[in-house]
Image 1 (cartoon, rainbow, N blue to C red):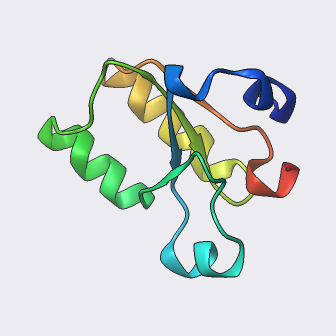
Image 2 (cartoon, rainbow, N blue to C red; image 1 turned 90 degrees about the vertical axis):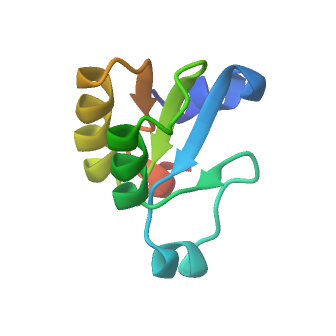
Length: 91
């Protein structure tokens, strides 16, 4: 998903997850509509069945690399998923 697509999507239709580490979020804060959930926490919640599947999940990281990997993981576990191309640095 490009930044333009993200800016035009209804925030009520997605679960926007900022998967960066705590230190990264301290350096550059989250987007207001994003929920901070580090990548390892997302993986744990998927594996335990706690991450909801009722909305498309869009992930954000620093530059897009981790999001791309997590995107594939989410798809393999039956989630509707996308990620912000270029990460928070593209905004």
